[in-house]
Amino acid sequence: MADAGGNGGHLPAGDAGSPAGTGGGPAPGTGGGGLADGVPVLAVQDLVAGYGEAVALGGVSISAAQGTVTAVLGANGAGKTTLLRAISGLIKVRGGSVLLDGVDVTRRKPEDMARAGVAHVPEGQGVITELTVEENLRLGALIRAGRAVRAAALEQAYQQFPVLASRRRKPAATLSGGERQMLVIARALLAAPRVLLLDEPSLGLAPIVISQVMALVAGLRDSTGLTILLVEQNARAALAIADRGVVLNLGKVAVTAQAADLAADTGLLNHYLGL
Image 1: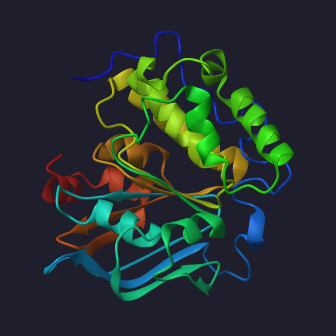
Image 2 (image 1 turned 180 degrees about the vertical axis):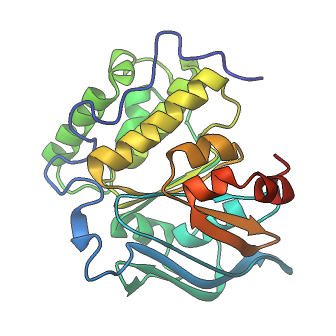
């Protein structure tokens, strides 16, 4: 059932206050050199991955520059979620490579990818409902060094997401769908990533909340310089904020283009996405 909205919990604009996760360290998107000498922050080259004997990705190549949103689109089963899982180390890569600022990070464990600057927000929000809002957030800051740094990052998260601040002591189970999406994004930002992998952030949300989530994603790019890979079934909403778009079909890249060009190509959207 679609969430009717945030019960007073409108999603914040991305330029409101300091970005979460910057206390005691570089702002998201700026650490580790970003885009140097034309090297993309994230480059996936001929990636092959799957489950058991099934191949879900059959040689996918994607690159993303610093401070951009790349929308990854495709029908169910196209390999979108598998792509994010392979990048973040959640599933084994069978072939190809993942480069972060030109450094090969293929087959690193998820915790090592997080330390390298890749944050993954999986489909389905991933809120731990038995914990409070603040306990959920603190999990995102665990890889930050030093108690003072973690405390400062948490306060910055509350500045950027004031609705979460007002509910910090409440069980996460009491949050609306839009507020839960805020929570998982804020938790990911507490790790001070340079690359943010978002898997279906609009899933199950009401249209007005989807618009707020997309505005938040665009605001994060603009205010922090994050490199964002956005997997999304709502193609039009994703393309409206993205810089580039990639369409996957049966585990392969079918189309890569500027987002505006993809959005304007109704024939292509109908052929691959049924729009």
